[in-house]
Length: 502
Image (cartoon, rainbow, N blue to C red; front, side):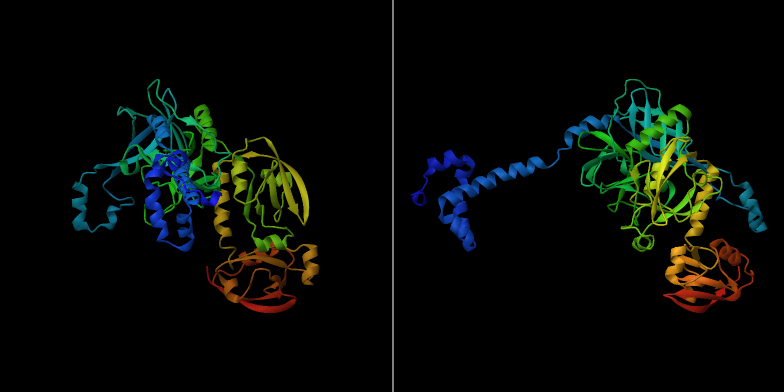
């Protein structure tokens, strides 16, 4: 019978090869010393043979699945460059005022030469066209008096700036060379979390350094700088000062991003790196080459994130979309009929899962083009057509200032909105405004909570949010305590609101 079969050395050699033959006896002895389940394998030659075959074959397969970076680095690295910049600064600090210096020392400062101290900078970049066009980060070359590009063959050339875009942190450079190696441009559109990526750059001026990792997330928004206009790729690739502007490549050797920022509390790499998607970058490059600058679409609203509580209060089945908190006067949004309290759930057919998705979509839309907005208003789905405007510097500043104010609310530290008819019925009130957000300030200290309905303020019945804001802004500037009537869970109560002096 098969259970009585005992293969000799020739049978084993034929079945599993020379490698298993040499270790068959030793491994059998080792297994006999282990747990009973392993001893049973050692006592059965067929089971032992199959076990050894599995171990021998599985190891090479696992090794073969691990990515091999050598070839793609060899192909891509000739097009990666090191960028050195020189910036000058005087030896006197900004804001130096000689009149603030005691008379006895003024003569010393007058005699001291106003030297220009060079401040070197380092970064990376990559060649996108063979006639010398190079892409890098704006912050690498911003304010530079001289830009030197070191090619992979050690040649150095002075570069000129074709154009920059601070909002996306991109800069297009040009050197006088021909027949240069170039990178392969990929696409970031289909990039997914878990994909292998590598970075090539000059961290701390160590040229042509290669680091590898995976995509951690896509579509990330960062709170500062270009965060509202770039859907960053988040990776765990080691990025350090000097890597900025270098390429992020996939396993096919195609550029999918430009390494731009890191999140750190130490000044160095902490596992959170962010890259600008190459699709966004190439759109910017096309405009920089054509016009030397970049124009972006503009909608003209302030938005906020829709959390679980807000989703429930607005009748949504899940938190999604961008909640409109303010519509700017004479903006494309106002002309299209968008209202405060609307939740934008789709832009031109693309779903908005996070509120941060909307600025990315609008910013990449060409000015004067028509887009379709899907909006939830009072529990109903409404479709609006909007003609996208062009983002100007004044529009950008006006968008930022209210955004700062929204984080602290009004003078008493809250934001409110008008009550819908259904909300008045639900809360059993005939007037008032809904408290949407409570920040640090007098209202929070008085005990006001989100969801409260304010019906009276300083003896005045409240009908609209505009009326409430007007009353708050016209409170005496030297500090005052005013009574405020609040309805919470159907029960009215008065609170004393102590407003400090401005």
